[in-house]
Amino acid sequence: MSPMRKIIHVDMDAFYASVEQRDDPSLRGKPVVVAWRGARSVVCAASYEARVFGVRSAMPALRAERLCPDAVFVPPDFARYKAVSRQVREIFLSHTDLVEPLSLDEAYLDVTEPKRGPALATDIARTIRAQIREQTRLTASAGIAPNKFLAKVASDWRKPDGQFVIPPQRVDAFLAALPVNRVPGVGKVMGGKLAELGITTCGDLRRWELAELEQRFGSFGRSLYNRARGVDERPVQPDQPVQSISSEDTFADDLLLDELDEAIATLAEKTWHATRKTERIGHTVVLKLKTAQFRIVTRSFTPERAPDSMQELRDIALALRARVDLPADTRYRLVGVGLGGFREREPVVQGQLFEPW
Image (cartoon, rainbow, N blue to C red; front, side, top):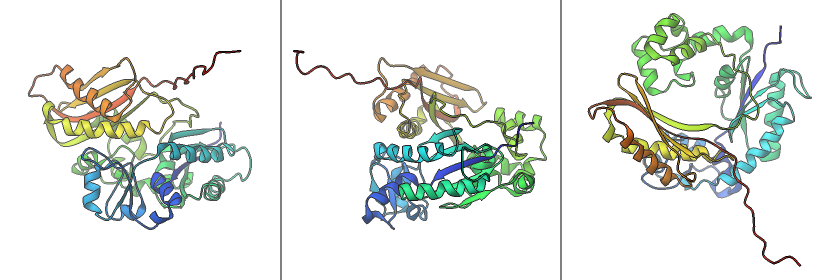
């Protein structure tokens, strides 16, 4: 039998905002919001000083300003964030080749068989965090567990600048009391639906049969069933090229197609910000809708050249509504905006300035 996996999830603390505070001493100790100002802008990141006021990433910038009037808004500088992310990636790779980046600021590491240094996963995580602090002057949190799901939950347990371990023998006890809204994918709307069924913890979730959960929640029901039992067989997959990036929103009340403008515009900006975290370029814009009857409808368009601005992505997504041919009185419970067809950036070839001698 292969040994039980030792997985670390490393998550940089308020990454974009922390980089800004590191590089500009005048921002330290202040509530920093990384975002462009504007009616359609969303928050890319918020410092912990801003989070005290309820400011969170992906929140509309106008709402963040209302929650924290004294916040300092800083426009994002993705080139600088990517440079720091590359530093952190090199630290990961010095311990294991099995590194799966999720974004610029987080990654999974499989340290079942580390390259060097300590053998215990908790010691490896502690060493990695110390190296990040020393080399970048930033902090990171880590979760250590037998699989990716549990490691991700654990990394959020002692943020910022902490780590938490869930050893195999403690998985059942830990999950029994874990609030179900700590399970990735269970947002406010899904959490509310589960609460209506009397499900508030993973222990409650375990009392439901797989067939019942699948009947109510489709494929996500199987995920809920497995997560409640700590089951996650996904391996850490290094160097997986980005294929698609999307943002979705589930409404508290079902909406008509003509009522989705604001949601589509906001989701387009979220998706655009997320694409700035990858070196590849997406070419296909996708609009996803889910009806009140859980029917999924998608429409896509691939322009001659890749969208090169948030506004262009938004305009294409809005235009895709015209290709939805369901009855006008159809109501929708979810909308999503995605970008797919990612390819490597084509190298820029500079022409000769002078004729050869």
